Length: 339
Image 1: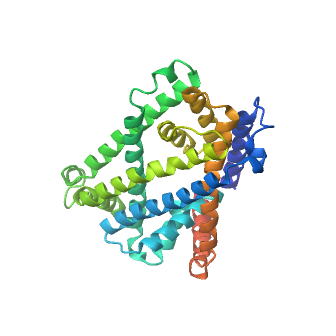
Image 2 (image 1 turned 60 degrees about the vertical axis):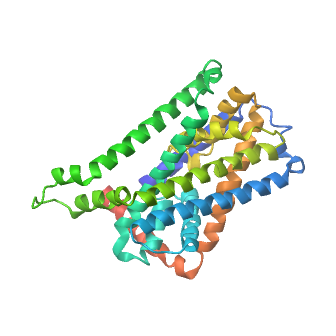
Image 3 (image 1 turned 90 degrees about the vertical axis):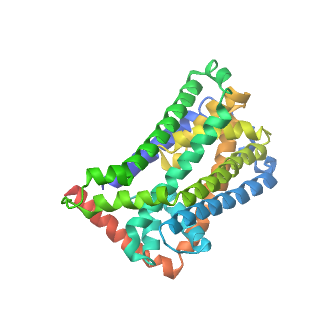
């Protein structure tokens, strides 16, 4: 019940953010409301880039799984990535995309559930490192004008500096704490531990320090993926009739993605559009209706279309059989929490 209330609150907040983004602007002449004026070739390009983004993301996770000795095909990793996205988009309870991927892959590797879970966590961390490096590389020396124009734009950029800088520091600290030198002093040999979980997590995490080649390869793959992913919104702006510099979009999107990743709205809808509106107006003078429309088109090309493909894959009997297990686990967790 609490999770349904939380989801309802997110829906209300999503509606509020969309109202905030759309209020005070004239969208009557926007190409978003006149499909005949849209550049459908750019939308098709955005959809293609969305698929490529998910494929590259699947390759990154496949590399991290191999570091743990978990062998699956790239095709299966791609399928699981798409199926996880449908859970990210429509989830109501406690089962998100990562949890769904753990359940689905656990059917093949039931003895490696913790390693699968850790690989997904490291997958997110690798993405954060790549996004941070790209943000600092692209934005260095480019936002002086922004800081003098808009208080909200200045706040968004400062949030990016704190978010990405703090994220890199936290990841570095996690590697230090998980290293054998530190871990052996915290949990000395022969010392009783309340849970085997406390011992295994640092050991599994430390695999990526020992097999640094896999981690570096995954980081390079992520560095290739991010410009492709951000170019989807560039296609969205072109589709709505407002050509924009790709580098400008790449410079702004990491901040937009960081803010929209906060669990405030459903899939970041509303927050993403308002942040794009603020940053693109400050950087290029882009009209609000263009920024919002391009953001919504980018979201549809990247998230909506491909999550629907993941939903179709999930309907296969071999994967659909996991629905009951997911629902039962979610129910047990909810009952335990409420108790």
